[in-house]
Length: 212
Ligand code: ZN
Image 1: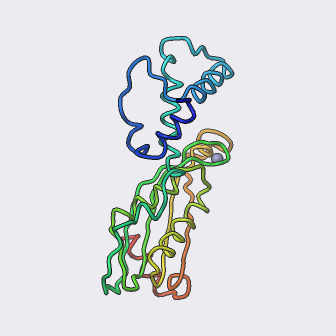
Image 2: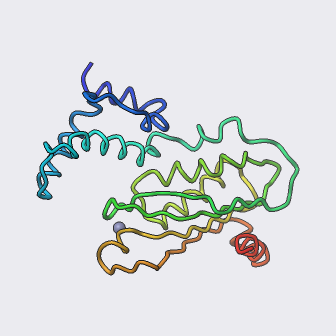
Image 3: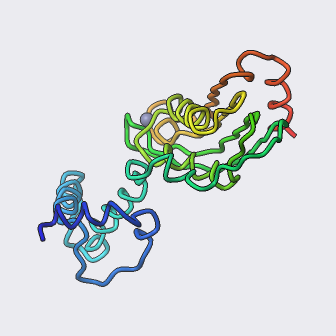
């Protein structure tokens, strides 16, 4: 089996948690990717053959696969079997969902919290699935604005609620470590759909929930 075939096979199932497993000393995870990382190490002026860096290419390949595992995940897989008929009409809010993503401009991490609310229309989704849904889109190369909208749209499409609200607050290491070097700024983005976009009172109720 070629590296590529083996890699694709691994990607199809279980990549989500698999990347955290310990590995044996002589393991090759993805020869091509590891070669690129080795070249990168040389390019930045270090020596990939020194002891501390020997297994770095393998670790980087695994870490990158994990951090971008959202490409192998689909919203329908995540919510499958977790949508229930329920005549609840009150607002549901899941707040302070931790997320970690990579900015698509620098491939550097940005991370923070997501607050997700929706107004059910006969159907609710398991609460842990809301957090998983955030990961589906966060574990890709992203811009925070698009990430926020994708989470909102995925809930609208799969749950058909009266409305959805998503607010994300994040720190961007590409701003903190380079460029303007502003360590304390956070970026807040929001996406309002349905009743949250149309009705100021619904929006205000959501905001009061996430501020409490
Ligand atoms: Zn960036």
